[in-house]
Length: 291
Image (tube, rainbow, N blue to C red; front, side, top):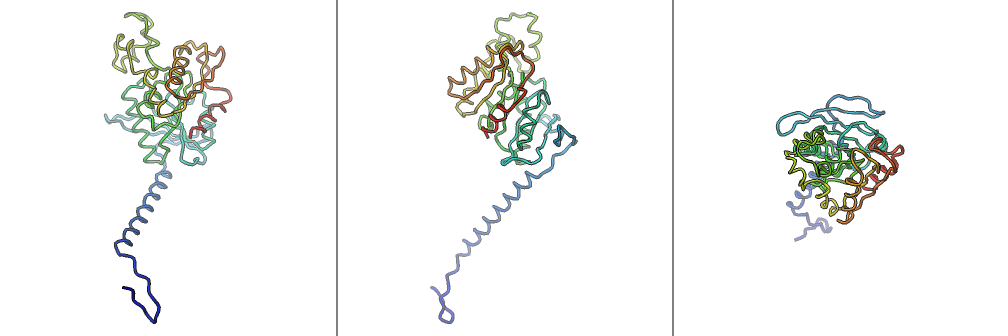
């Protein structure tokens, strides 16, 4: 029932429990926004140096065994909306023109040490730790762009295939797409296998298992096509280390058959080196469009 004072009707008060819920909601929103800002502004630990005019931070993280592994973050002058980042798998600072161009566009550049692990389960676990640290502790985008040169292709594809919703796009540069092209037709004792022993050992594979290995990206990237992850590869068609026909050309054929989108930039007569493009604009534009 409404009450009046001096003939003026009074509005009914909102129920107390409704007002309390409103205050609780406001408080929750404030806390969430504050947490997001704090995460984005949190400083990186470790040693700080200059890298091509940008601040570079080197610091360790620990894996499930308690063993430290190195991480590296280069920060832009001003972060782009959503805090996008490019994640380089191997060969830090080699042909860095794409990385530098993206830093100028507001991307962060990230490197996590997985050398000599050949994209195995231990390497995947390290990347998971790094990913969680950056996305929850520093507000990074949950969908980084992945970059892999040569054997770095193993890492980016092995991780992306297991985490297809956590990838915005993939840039492979003369990427190795699996071990099977290297071991097919080889017999035990073949001199060529010496170069592959560390690779097989990292994955716990015998020669016979490697020859029948069904876990290469050549066989398992269908999940990326289904998730509509766009890909770009830059390769020389005379590559002596990662043969174009057996790796990118065959992979691109399969990826398109699975319904995926892949752009292949072929350097006519190009060898394995040099990587990238002198003018990385086509690569940079592709990555920007995928964000």
